[in-house]
Image 1 (cartoon, rainbow, N blue to C red):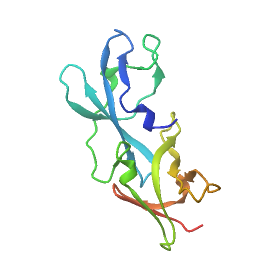
Image 2 (image 1 turned 60 degrees about the vertical axis):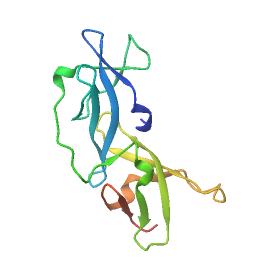
Image 3 (image 1 turned 45 degrees about the vertical axis):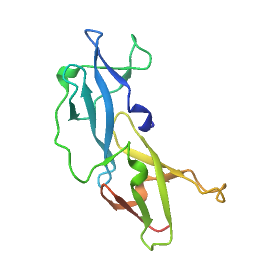
Image 4 (image 1 turned 135 degrees about the vertical axis):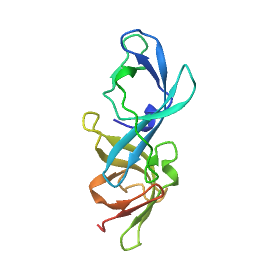
Length: 152
């Protein structure tokens, strides 16, 4: 599942059928290679809060929306080491030897475990045969502004 497409989607209350809020952003924990939290903008108060990742199911009432039960959301505190999917292009990716850098444009994860499988990278125009994905297993360390990769 591509995480960039989740931003801006409405979250529909699965029982009552009303829009409970919108997914404003998805926060990534690069150190553990997983989705850390969803930032939800609530409809009633128009305030954002971070909640644990929950099971996503396409809404039967609104095709673009996501069915969820807001009563079961668990609040989490945002960590300073988490990176935002909205600003993922600002993350610097460098190989351990410093020879290779790239720009991340999106992330792909497993929707059941929320583990990041790969990152979508922006290729340079002259590297038309270069890979488009970067495996999450290559990450050695990372924070909100930089990723360090294994050589290879």
